[in-house]
Image (cartoon, rainbow, N blue to C red; front, side, top):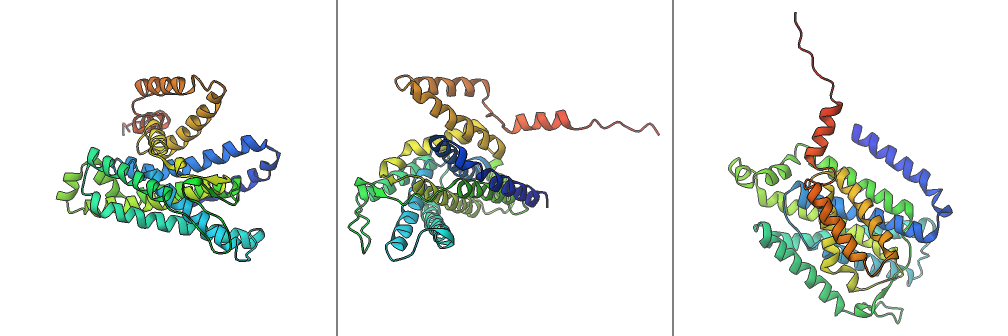
Length: 327
């Protein structure tokens, strides 16, 4: 019940804040929207890397599948007489996001079944290779849609700008809600068992491969939805938007926020995205300063901003001491 109450409060807050969005500078609003997209991507990767204990470097590949699928769907609908505004446009956009998420989930299943018997570095290499395969395929495919002279591929895909503040943060709230409820459910204990000790989990009869594949599929679905939001927040997307560096950025957010800490990952997404934007004023030193700050933070906070040990200390601080009865 508490989780549903939290989701309701988040939805009401987002709807209220959406009325203030038109008053914000368009550039700043665009950066806020990008933060919301990164929250969805990082929380979905946290299910794989943080809660299930895998090491995936292919999240940008799932993001690309969702981005191009949703872009093709909305472009196709708009060129076939469907007005992309009002309630009709909202429904079409929702359908496009779901299609992008589902196709990304299929891609997650496809890469997950043969590769998730691997562990650690081997799994990271396979997922990184998948990321590059997806990017190269997109780079060499022309997305020709009947009724237009449009051509995509390496030259870029012109996308209808439909992403709004309320869409992005409602999706982020749903992603956080779903991931938190999944890992805290009875079924979700299987993901945590795989992370804590995969050999012991197998000895207790837990099908670890099944749990890893399902974590991959769910994470890929939400990455695809996030990719759809990313595509429609830009006027043009190219394969260069989904290189392995994008996957690295998402992994850094998860690690910095604290593996397995949803609140920490959300905080890290806000901090790192904002920090990267602030450093644009010094482009020649941007990556040097950014990298040094990351190194300093990881040395001082190896468990992340809000890792398990940090949360444990906070709960211990607020927990009322139990006084033993003398009766």
